[in-house]
Length: 203
Length: 198
Image (cartoon, rainbow over all chains, first blue to last red; front, side):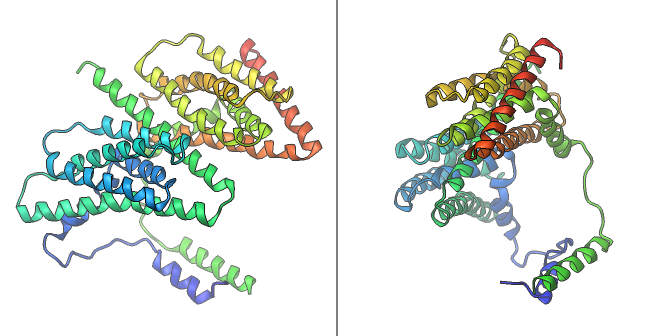
């Protein structure tokens, strides 16, 4: 379909970069948004989300349901019981490496192993998303946002990956997904090593 | 109809480029600087370039599944090498290993060698250790380590893709000659790196 000049103009207006000055209509809802984007707020968390999405994207929906159930349960457990001091980035990078390497090399085989990685990812993302102590209502709202954000990220990536493989059955798509996973695995491993090396340095 | 759309797109681009909006870009430090230095690290080292392109070329030459397996194995094992470099685990003859990777992989292409898949993967993986180690030892001192890691992994992958794209010429007889010729060039360059002539 050919875009008309009016539509193109409208699109250009819509994508114009401008500061967002709106305020939230619901008191306390800021915490929800903070929680929602929290899984993408640090490289470690973003890599876990992307790695898990790519890993689960190799599964058919029936098997993916099992892995998502494990992930969701671990995420809730992490959010509820994972408070306290947590230098958790090395664990997240290691989990991201495991997820990405499995996505690159095994392409959906070994469901039990995938579930173990999903559980680790869920627990890790849950632990680092626990908000600082505060009013119970705000705490719950922020936790709800964090749960939704951490659940939606891998879910959308799973959907995208699955859709691409179904829509474009040519081998190139599958290869691209494997290569992307391999690149993310490499980045995760390097970051893991950097943190371990930094921890070994004398203060 | 297409021309009208093109004119509309061009007009919008001109209008947008003339809009006086505040420049919010940050400086070359931090993420941007780290990414650029990571991205250019493999590209500005000819020994890295030769070997990365050779991996892609050889993968394309061997066909499926090597065409995807080698570019998947390489970055993961390269990261292991980077880990060794970061943690300070000693590895001898880094530069020699990197130069040898160009020599050997180039020769594999020239000779149209078709070893078993696992042999190809092990060979490529072994050389990836040296390349990763070199990246890893230079990583901690940069502006942003994460951005550096992203940069050098993407650059490495893109060099593989260049090799793969060129290697797909093997479908045609003349292309086969061109690819093997490229392998010869890479191998010769590797000899140059090895002897210090290049």
